[in-house]
Amino acid sequence: MSAPIKSYRPEVQIWIDGMEYSDHLGDTGSVRLRKSLYAPTGEAYIDFPDMPTAERDSLYGILPVMAPVKILARRWVDGEVSLRPFKHIFRGFVRSIGRDEQVGGDGRVQRRVSIVAHDCGSAFVMQSIHHLITWQNAGEAIPAALQWLRDFNLVSAPMPAGEFLWDIGYNGTKQIMDTAQFAFERHTTVKKGDVLPSTALSTEGPLWEMMNRYADRPWNELFVREGDEKVDFIFRPTPWRDLNDKPLPDAVIETPFIKVPMSNIVSLSAHRDDIELVNHVWVQTPTFAAADMAQSRELKRGIVNEETIAKFGNRLQIQPTFLGPLLPTMNQDAGTTARAVQTWTDWIRDRVTWMLAAGEDTHEFERGSMVVKGDPEMMVGKYFTVERGPLQWDGYGIGVGHDFQPYRRYLTTIEYVRSNQWKRRQAIKQPWDRERATKVVPIP
Figure (cartoon, rainbow, N blue to C red):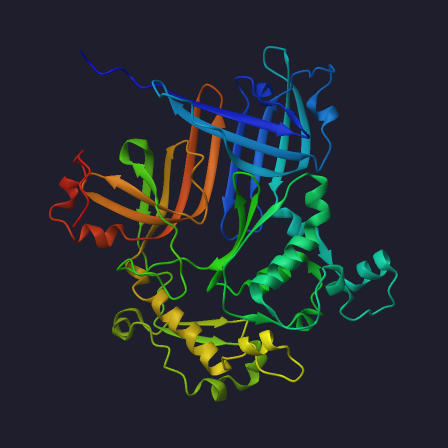
């Protein structure tokens, strides 16, 4: 007897302004999501056929801009003992709502309601900093030096970078988040670097500009993504690995990786190139920008791959660092003084060491994208493992998209970088044949 055909059942829930509108998708609606690790906000595009609500009105007539939006999804298989729970794949706000009406070729009127929503990271973009805003809200005299810091419950004393970013991110968007009944959950694990808030006084514009500046990329990552109960606010050392799968300095690798069996992959596109190859790195700080040569002459030379110079030419990456060590000053409390143990020379040396490790063999890493059967577990900032017979390889997800169309499909697209597939292929014989094997056997 032949094996029964498995039936995959994708489901989605759409909640807007506290009401569920999943049924309004009908059989022609769609939900599309896009999230990038390097953008402040993710986006959702919801397309409804225009059907009447219980109040006999169009969704266009009842949904306000900035209404809170929640989208949940799951994919389960016939024969499972219990249904998989729904998982949040989006929390955010309605930013645009439109209604299109047209007469079709058959003379029938066709109407659709389209919604564009941004996730909770958009609160960092909507909230602005400016001394005039502070004055108009609080009536403080212009220029009201450092007053915006008090608005966010900050002081002018030095602060660890993680504490600084959490305080301005959380306090700066609290009203927006509370109004929508959303909340951030803190995941800040960066241990190195301090911020003197008074140096950020001149910052004006979206709150995200300041947060992104003091995140100190590429050494750290700053982003939000969906948690089970709240929105995760993540500020952490970049969790990259070298080509031998060893973590870079300060990196903490989340395990286990998300497993992706080859049977779940719809399409796979991979490539290697020399676009990001560098063989010279230079780290500078605006604090001592005028004295870069003087401050750096004692440091280790920033040569990444000297053997690549003849083949690829001299390629230089200059990277500014906006964080830095806390230098001892007068009138510091004991806890603050205890953190002031590193010189600027040590700080730059640490940053250079990281860049040397991150830049090594970049032309041998793979990047690409793959489309899999809809999987709400896929998230930016997570590693995955593709199980392809004896050839198992890993990638780091920097972009995730979901495409749900009722009764037709639910697909998830993952963009990834720093994949070790090419290196893993070198470890097995006849990889073209063996990757087609069905038995999963880890490479020794």
